[in-house]
Length: 281
Image (cartoon, rainbow, N blue to C red; front, top):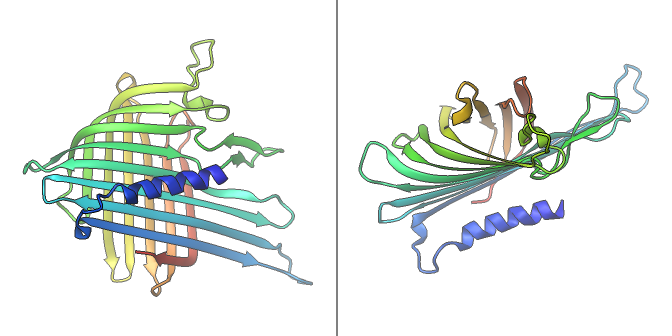
């Protein structure tokens, strides 16, 4: 866990200190939102039945944007969420366990779309388990599996609500022990712990204010290798946030993942949470 914390601190600090000492502060637009959610139910001599339960989660969404007086612009987003729950005498279970860091460099040519280059890193934060079996089977660990994707192409970002980009992508998949289904080629006798694919990547971001205190944010990522264009990896992240006051929010999140190398079935995760959300800057 310490290595995970140190990694996120390194990514965060490297983003901050990559600025020149003499750079104009108005060219940098930082945004850091931290959230904590807690749900707890306790019983004592309760005749109507029930079990004690505790659930908690933590999240961070850090965005750094840079727009220079020249034609170059830069955006980096570090987002992660991690949570656990415990019901009665059962073991504590992981409920959320995702992180990604996305870096995009744009060049404004004055066209309708902009050339861009990007790098995307995705990984579980800690160990994750399958709780459907008689015993808890570990299925993932930090960067096991892990994915790194580089992309170059063209982006449209002239709308404050809708931005999208499409490009040639190079994806590296890593595994050590638990994520081998993402890297291993079943047609070979050797167990591969690394896979490289060249293909097409599309990423679309939506940020829409439904009403004055309700905000929707969504991200849709599509990727397919040139050798399997009939099968696409899909990741859709949706968050609906209702702001009660400056620090209290109600959040509904829905995450959909379709990735055949992980599971032939569509994976979904949803959560409705009330918690503290603080905009640090």
